[in-house]
Amino acid sequence: MRALTYHGQGDVRVDTHPDPRIEKPTDAIIRITSTAICGSDLHLYDGFIAMMKAGDIIGHEPMGIVEEVGSQVKNIKKGDRVVVSFTISCGHCWFCENTLYSLCDNSNPKPENAAGVMGHSPAAVYGYSHLLGGIPGGQAEFLRVPYADLGTIKIESDLPDEKVLFLSDIFPTGYMAAENAQIEEGDTVAIWGCGPVGLFTMKSAWMMGASRVIAIDQVPERLKMAREHCKVETIDFSKVDDVVGELIEMTGGRGPDRCIDAVGAESHASNMVSAAADKLKQTAHMQTDHPYVLQQAILACRKGGTLSIPGVYGSTATIPMGPAMNKGLTFKMGQTHVQRYLQPLLDKIEAGEIDPSFLITHTEPLENAPAMYQKFRAKEDGCIKVVLKP
Image (cartoon, rainbow, N blue to C red):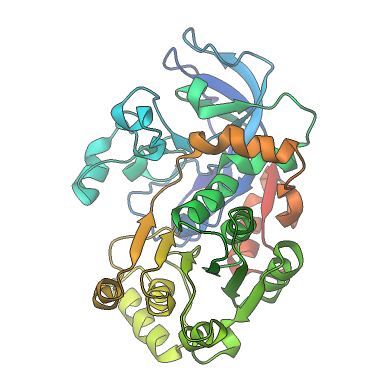
């Protein structure tokens, strides 16, 4: 099969690999019909994620047709059309039984790698380093799906791939980010990042009763999509000297009730002095995370407010914990418990409450994936979300 393969920082290629096969009775093999490039894939591309190896197949937002199932798979069969959750979860450990699926105890076949860094291992993730299992990813023609009964949702309607594909990751991720923010009726919500996760977080914040949503970014096309499709107010941080001051002023001095970091490790600073200092540290391999959004969110959030973090970080972010403690902020974060949200969010799509395809800007053959990574990374040609067709 053909699959997008990691060869080092900034170097991905479509190579030929052996077709996947059933390895355990709970596996399924999926023929991929659509797969997407995620913003967190750029963390791999830019070398921010540890334990990537040359030859790894990447990608974690796939869907397709079931080609084969193991003897213990009961919920899907050959010919079914399914979306695959990016987190891999066994369904029977303590964490899965408590619907904390991204914290599964059993799906990472190399838990010692993550435990050595984090204290414990979270769930495995497709195509996202040997820290999280080294499981081949979904930017490929075929995919082996472990624990297939729990890791897929069957699409029985005739909705096109583009309307359901993002159940694999970014729609549940945005929804859980808004849920983690503990939004209450009438809240003002500030969301950093108008990329795909940020856009779904905005949509979800409205669903949960926010009365005002403010989005922060600097890319004109992303800001425009946020205004037009998500009906939010926006701040272009490249044109504002003090994002924190702007947010506090916009909220009458109190600050947003809920702040959401939908950016993560590779955020950009409006303060060029800080950016230059961090760039120097990164060059010297002293720092990989750029915690500008976390710093701004902590300072801007109202006292007693909540900070939700769906953004991906490593282990070197400098966080102003003193202000966070003294302001009494609540932090909620984590990889998405995708399986918890699959059916409820599919129901919303089928009911016409949301059409997730609004954010697709580019649809390309899998063979064009390396060029699309470059375009997505550089934010060229209005590139916000890329769907690949194997």
